[in-house]
Every structure is written in structure tokens, then in C-alpha cells.
Length: 357
Image 1 (cartoon, rainbow, N blue to C red):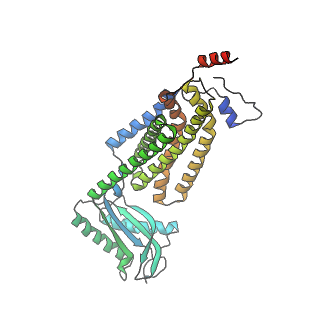
Image 2 (cartoon, rainbow, N blue to C red):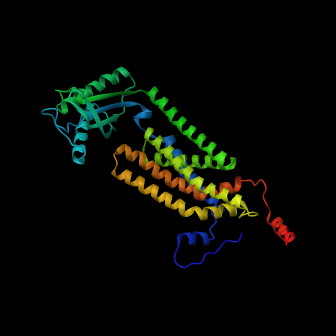
Image 3 (cartoon, helix red, strand yellow):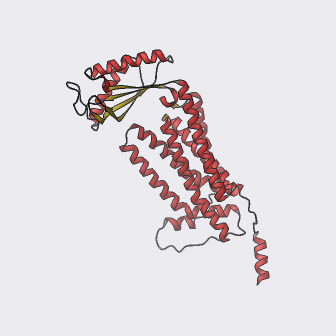
């Protein structure tokens, strides 16, 4: 293939990529090795240590505690949760109560609460999620009542006990159902995406998309297992966002490939050359897309609360994984799998041109 040369006037990322001799499709066997290594490490950790499941999947209890920021409960302590110092102080007092009941690893998040008795609507509160030390529902309910009473006493809420609400218990059977629903949501998303890609770009592109989506899911899950991030419904939502982002990246590449096939620009060229040229011409768009996505997720992770960070950080991993699979894996996979229906061989093209002349 004769690669078009661009006149270099000053440094340009586009010109540097287009004029480079690097072959993205040819080096597939080397690009796939880092993914295999990350997946194997993640698999070993998942089998030995397991995932760090949240109470959505492992079962647990939820409790919401009013911060009394409006000072509506007389003689009770007041906290402004917009102030990190107040948030930490209130959390520490709750943590001391949990220590008395031998409960560890609770998660804390700022939320809002409505208390009709006090006329509180969207007042500040902390929602606490913690795992139960027992599987017996009666024992858990009794223990939660004791914890609730102790927290009421700690914050001097005895004049209005509705300031501390028990959000109920997630049983192991309910958490199992949630896990099944989560995997079903991922499976349905992959099926719908593959149907769309298949109708628009063909079966080969749909197969390629499914492979890349599974790659991104496995890499993101492996790194989450390695970094011990919490796996819950927030993480599942992050995976769905990653799949959609990855699909958008692949659509950019597949659209350019389809454009080449219609225009006949690369008639007679090998799949490897076509895929390599496609990545070079779309690389700037893919880089900018990844940079914008990373900046947005990093900002959300920095300024957001704990659950927002739990949503943002897996997406950061997914964005990097998606960029890698689209740029370094997809070209080689497409060049191997795609079969031209009416592929013109270079020799035949030259003979037809001679006859025409």
C-alpha cells in the first residue's frame, strides 16, 4: 500500500501518526499479552481473596441519621455535613457506637432525610451501610434496634427518635437475586449492542464488538479486584457506562472502515493495511475522547462523595481499557476475522486497468 505523505510544516499529531510506519494490526500478538497478564492476576485474586462485595451483594443493614443542621431538636448536637470537619466528627461518633457492637467496615454517605414531626424536608443526614455479623433475621433486627437506641442516646435525639431511621435488612437471598439481576443487565446490554452493530456494520463487526466489550469488562473487573474497590450496584452501573463508551469508540472505527469499503479507496489492499490506516486516521479522535472522559471522571472522583467516587473510578479504568482495546486489539482482530464478499486482488486490479487503457 502506498501511504500518503503529508508535508511537514510544523509539529502535528495527525501528521506524525499518518506518516508513521507503526502497524497496529500486525502487532496484535504483542498487544494482547498485557491484557492476559492483568486478567490472570485479577482471576487469581478473585479466586483467593474474592471481590470486595458491598451490602448490595453480600447482605447487610442500612441506617439513616439526621444531622440536626437546622437545630430543630433542642439540646441535641448539630452538624453541618457540608463541612468536612463536621462530617468526620459525626462519622467518628457513629463509628464508636458500632465498635461497641463489634461492627466493622461500615460505609458513610451524605444524604437527605424528611421528618414530618419536625417539619424537616430534605434535611442533611448520613446514611450508614454495614454488614451483619449474623444470618438470623430475628437476631439482626434485635441488634439493629439496640444500635438505633444507642445512636439516639449518643446524639441526644431522645425527644424525637424518628431522627434515626432503620432502612431495613438486605438478606443473603435478596443479595443473591441482586447479583443475578446485575449480570442479567450486563448480558442484555451486550446483546442489544451486538444486534445494533450487526445490523449496521455486519456480523464480523458485531463479533468484534462483543470481544472488545468482554475484554473491557474483564480488565475493569480484574483491576477492581486488585485495587479492592467495592463491588455493588454502583459498580455494575459503571460497567454499563464503560460498555456504552467502548461501543462509541468502536463505532468511530467501524464507520471509517465502512466508508473505505464503499468508496473503494482500498480496493485490492489487505485487511491489515485497511485496519492500520483506519486506526491512524481516527486516533486523534479516540485520544481526545479518552482525555475528555478521564478529566470528567477524575473531577467527579475528586469533588464527589464516596458513592460517586465508587462510580467514577471504575469508569476511569474502563475508559483506559476501552481505548486500549479499540486502538491496539480491534484492528488486528478485524483484519483476521473480516472476509470481503467481492474482494479485488491487486493483480486483477492492475490487469483491468491495462485492458481499460
